[in-house]
Image 1 (spheres, rainbow, N blue to C red):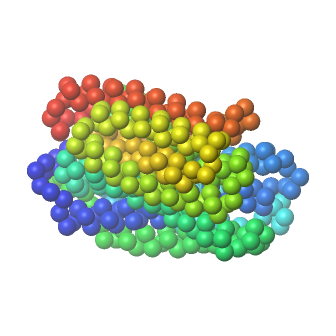
Image 2: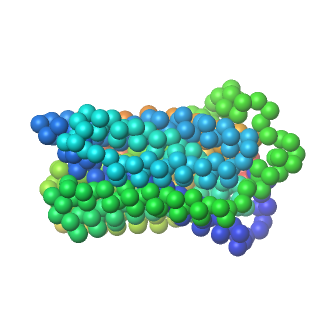
Image 3: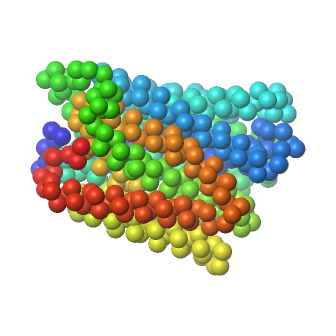
Length: 433
């Protein structure tokens, strides 16, 4: 990566990080607000006589559709991002998110138009998925190509924290809706408010990105005429198989941890332990704040200690934090806030994931490499995780704990591999790819 390794973050770097993180937060809010109203949406968009477990499964299925279509949107945006510029695609993705979010807020329910209601909802989720497919990889590439090499971990940690702040915003809005309206008022139309807000947020975020500048790395490649000579994705698939494999495993860790511990847990607490919606969302907000802190902490750590040591320590912490949280719910529910906060911080290891991914691919195909790996893996693991955990929940109420523990083991093994690579490659400019 052609960065100045010795300089500190300057005013332009901070401006870029701030605008990228804020815009990402607002767009991510649009994508995930759906999950906080799954129980309400399930009641409104499916027949009243549908069994509760099936209704919940169908609703999570529509949520998962947004993940399944991510590769298509991500690959297309990454292709043009590698050929015509990072900034253009970074701005386009947010417009493609705002419109369907507004549309969801205006959709008629099953009682009004029958089976067309869930089908239209599915279509909107597909459009959202296509947009977010280009947003996250594009954001990681964008900030990593602006900052010094020795600050890439911090930059990616801040950006991931910003994206996570979108989840926090969703949790806060959902909590406010649940405390301001009765359940019947929410069913009568209160659930639409977060989606209307999301559309407005998205348009505002698009405006903010007008002030961003193209990355120095891309400008340099243009000047040297070093842009990809062939189809970027073809080069990625043919020449960077190891990078793809590692990136997909890291994406599994990232996607499933956030899905299970942060996004699915409020509904899990309400259903499994009869915790009031407002209380579960308050605890979720605290856990998400700790996740934001964790992302930045692990981003700083990976710059300081390297990828291997950071992932080994972070994966052990994830195993301990998540296990304590889910087990304490069965024996000491009064520890909800403390244990959930600790679990949220431990999930912060995901803030170190983009540091590894941006170093796995050379600059000329970096956007395509990350986007392909990340979005295909997210489509598989992000889409199937809610369904899988829901299906095994009847077998054990600790299904989320066991699933996250398996992810921590994967992270530990990746940490061991990355540690070996760190030992072999001491120079910061050499990538693992």
